[in-house]
Every structure is written in structure tokens, then in C-alpha cells.
Length: 395
Image 1: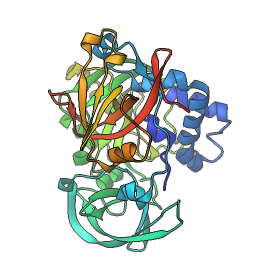
Image 2: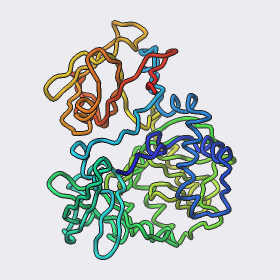
Image 3: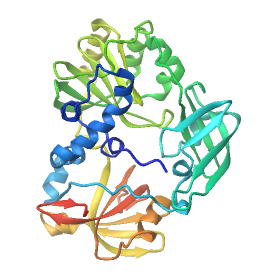
Image 4: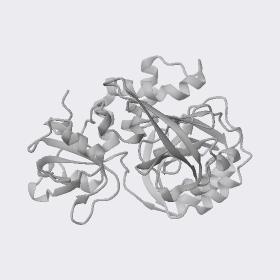
């Protein structure tokens, strides 16, 4: 099984900490730029956990002002990187690579893609996986579908009745122009600009949501001739003013990546696994920045992962109940949450661990909590302990 990267777990952390951690690891950005592009985030993330984990995780997981007032304790840890039994894995975890039309593709996102985003059937492919516990090899035939607006030379969706997942071509080159990026990935339909932070250097001065991104794409579409900036493949925000947009796209297999638009004329993003930087010009950027400043509303900080925590009070048939009063400043402000466990990723947390009623646990989920405090999109649950005002995961 492909282990989850630490960089994936903690998400879009402040670039300042990545730079500092990279310096700590001794990685030189200019030695091997292609290798840096692929591995520096991972190495830096490990260093972050070693030298600054206590400071960073609260920043990644911090909530709204309302949450700060309600809760006395907050999460300061993450679930362990566990190798699950084969029968408790999703297809995306079992089959990390596929072969299609003579090309190798690798999984891009462990979450399934909505079938409404899928186009024509392109054929079938062979998927292979190995059970690390037994060494047994498994093969599966997946149907391959086009992703609407996206070239199969970049991404395809593969799967079966259990769900389809986004896979990316292994041997890919960085597009020479910004227009190629737009066309290859269908960005105008597959990438939306909504939540963003105003940044001065590494300081985030405020959070906003833009009312409509049509004008942004109008300006960006006029920058198709913008060339790839090849002097570096790392966006350095230390001495820049820029906007950081949260980039989530099921079609592109991206969850909370980032798009940077800087006052000095650059468009940069990490949503393609590798860093793409294009110089679109100060005039174009000026129009975008002016537009969003006049067509946005204030917003709260948007955490990378949505999490609730508390005491596990019941393990039922297809659900668990979690009472968060143990975390609250005032117990009367607490609530009991009903979390559905139909997702295999939730079932394994219960059936493959020693989790029991009375444990202090945290649950990760996506989507919204219903008015009745029900959560239907949970995907992870792990035990923790209340330590020094925070919920810490035991060794």
C-alpha cells in the first residue's frame, strides 16, 4: 500500500515553515530542481513534525472564533499511518497504479470522483495491487473514463461499480504556456476561485470569499501566451504581496491545494503535484486583485481538515455517538454528534483497532453537519488523550 504522505495529512501549510524545514534538512533547491519539485514538500513536512510540530498543527487545524469561544481544548495531533488489512482498503488504496494504452498512471486522490464529472468510456485497464501482509498479488480490470474537460494525456478516471478514482499519467512534462495548462486540464470548468487569503510575505492578513470568479477567468484566459517560469519551481512568498486561493477540484483530484496570484505578476499553483509557475504580468494580476477586493466578503479561516472530537459514548449498528462536552469551556455548550460509519474507512477504525466506548476520539469528515448534529461523510477516527489543554495522539 502507498503510505499517506505527511505532506498530504497536514495539507497546505504556510510556505514559511516549509522553507525553514527545507533549510533544516539541508536540501538545496538549485541542485536538482526536478527532484526538489517532487520531494522537497515531503522532506520538509517530516522536518516540520520534528522541529515545529506543536506550533504548526494548531495553525493547520484552528477553527473559527465561535469554536475558540466554545472549546477549551483543541486537536494537536493526527491519526497514525496504519497499514490496513486488504479487505478493509478502498480500491484506490489497493490499486495505486494502472496501465492504460501502454502508459502507467498513478492514483492522484484516494477519494472517489463524482460520476457526473465523467465523460466517455475510453476502454479498460489492468490494475495491480499487493497485500503487504501476505505478499499476494491481486489484479483487477477497471473501466477507464474520460474526465470532462481534461485530456487523457494527463488524467483519467478508472474504477467500477464501487467508484471511480482519478489517476495521473506518470511521465508528464510541464506545459510551456499557461494556455496549454488551461486546455489540458479544462481549468475554466474544473477549477473555481472562491476562498482566499490576502498575504503580505508569509503573514495572512485576512480571509475572504469572492462573489463570482467569471471575471477572474476572463482575465486569466487572456494570458494564454504566458510562458513557464523556469528559473525556479518553488513559489517564494517571503517578499511578495499575493492572494492565496484554496483550490479544490474533484475533477482534477485535488483537495485544498493552493493557487498563488502575486502583485509582481505571477500565477503559481501546486495542484498538479508539481509546482507550475507562469508570468502572466502585473497588469493582469492588478485587474484580478482589484476585482476581488471589490467583490468579496469577509470569511473565516478555512482549516485543511474538518474535525470533531470528544468522548465515544456509543458504538451502534452503522453509527457512533461522540459527546464533545469534555472539550468545552462550559459543559452546557457541548453537543452529541451522530457519525455514520458506512464508509469502510470508518468501519475499519472500529473493527481493526481496540477502540471502545469511553475513549477520547477525534473524527475527520467532509461536508456539513446537519441541524441534528449528524455527520454522513466521516472518513477517519482515532484515539487521543487530553494533555496540557490539547488532544494528543498517543505513541
